[in-house]
Length: 207
Image (cartoon, helix red, strand yellow):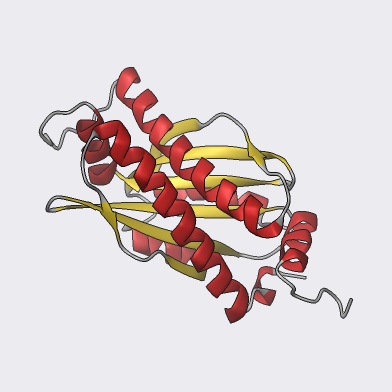
């Protein structure tokens, strides 16, 4: 079994899950910042890892990543990546200050951004848990600012036994005239990928 077995039907389901999860996350975020936030329909695709770095700019592009282990229900990881301009805009929005475009985030600002990643990932995993009827829990977030290639080496290692492709979900938020992008990676280990696909009704080895 490999990730190529995720067919169009499952992608449509995952897109709906992303829609629900992102909608819940944005509702929570809007309450925190006290502003109206809209979103575009999430894009869900299976991509080669090198295609992901192209979307992020290049392997050398500096980005902010928030990383989670899935600690109950499935074995795997979640990685949320924000381009630096989106990360800084989110922090400024949380701090209720004008966007200043400064990319050097201090400890408090990183903690705030980590909590945003926690809200987004938690909302997604709750929507997925409801859909597949399996209780899912994630670890506390770990945040890092690094080159895209370095951060993506985490899912590359996790997928090493499965495929060189990843499940990629792109979500865009709109606050006022500003567009904020977030890139979400769901990375189940091979046994959990089979379990997840079976929950979606995808036959595994004819069973």
